[in-house]
Amino acid sequence: MDRVNTPGGVPARPAAADRAAFPGMADLHVLVRQFPGSVPEVLGAWTDRAHVDGLARELGDGHFVTTAPLVDGATGFVAHVWECRARVEDQAVTVAEPRPLHGASRVVFDTADVPPERVHVDRHAAELDAAVTGRTVHYVTAWAPTAERARELAAARAEELRGTA
Image (cartoon, rainbow, N blue to C red; front, top):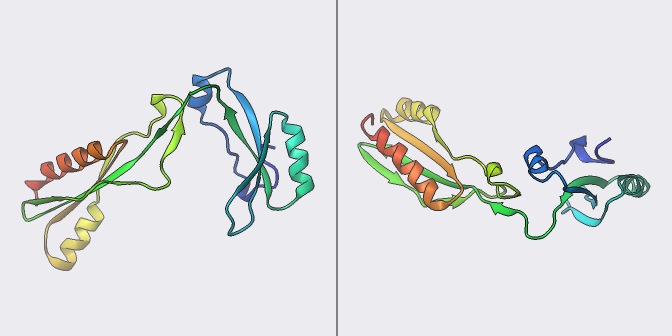
């Protein structure tokens, strides 16, 4: 059993790539208290999984154990995800200010684990806009690790679409 008394029973494990990058990384077993509508509270962390499982069972509902890597030194960094939207209408490109995608930032242990850059053109929104207003509009969303790169990606794709608006 990977977690005890967990809501949903979904195991929380370090990413496989994190474990592969640091094979000597030890597991730390964290006892967490969380009741519906409450903020999770870390009660403690131990290296002995069986001991923590026993504590969680004794404490009962609302308590669970999750595993996290015990990392030495200054290993790890925060990888952010920025989102930028662009709109193409009547040959005009409008690029919004990039914004951080809340909840998407995370600690990673290897640059290979940084979320990839992506660009999405919302064709369904364009079809709906055309059906309702009769206009040809393209909606672009780009995601990247920096605000500047997200803006670059959104603007570049919007420029590509400008000739089709």
